[in-house]
Length: 399
Image 1 (cartoon, rainbow, N blue to C red):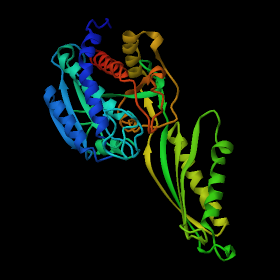
Image 2: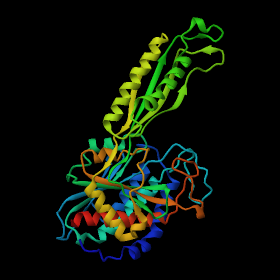
Image 3: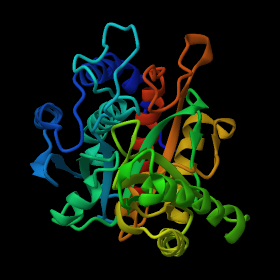
Image 4: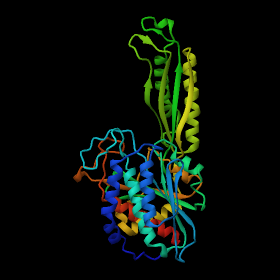
């Protein structure tokens, strides 16, 4: 494969004021999962102005797709999907910037505004370079990544079809990585996730007469304590796993023992088999604890995404493209992520690669992590993301 002589840097530098303006507009107007109507309209208008074909809206409720058809003769004629997520989080923003959220209690606290802007920038580069490949690029903007099942909804609406996608790529801005560095990890890059709800049913009564009750708070507390031994005492410590509880709700009065308690939590696992095993053990353990104390439980699992597993060959294409662009000192495998991403739903049936672009800059104060009310990024990272994605896409299509 010969080196690409196209001047990405100059082209992207010229685009960056518009990319930054797009990102700040989106940051000011965040929308929650499956409510991204204004965001979707903004994207569709941009894609139409760029000249994409077959623009579709309402895919998976609020998703958007469009096609770039190569006009060259170099490559295999395959279809590559590039994806960005669109949704924001229910967080009250604490940043003091001109582009602060105008939707109180909703914030782009994970970088999805930058993902949309980078993919729009990448789209412009690829439209300008259609003569360099003969395949098709499907541009996909996904709703509801933050636990809403957006990838599943888009797959159900045929997002990987018409035309059939041969491979997929995506990226995530990452605040733990220095601005401009790139992580490309073959194999498992992010763990799988399953959310769970445990409802404990006891018998309520007066707080002064606990012997007349079956206290669901005590039962729930025992379940939490016992569940934390699932990983520490039952699972192989060589393969990471996590069971965490994030919510425990019961009762409304200081002197009343309630009838029910509701526990919410998450399971993280490196493999699907691991996750299934922990689910089964958690349910058996909770049922056993509750039964021994005279209570009963009901389980509900949801908010699931499989482990995100990068195809080694496509990961190598991304690694080679980014190394050529930024040098080997800026590109590494990085760490296995204990957080999750539903891009794994796309990589389940289709080979691909999901990689990370650093956005941390301590000198500028961009140090707050994802999902923090003061999260913000060094916008120079977006130039790295656009170049990384565009180079990787063209290298894949030319191969």
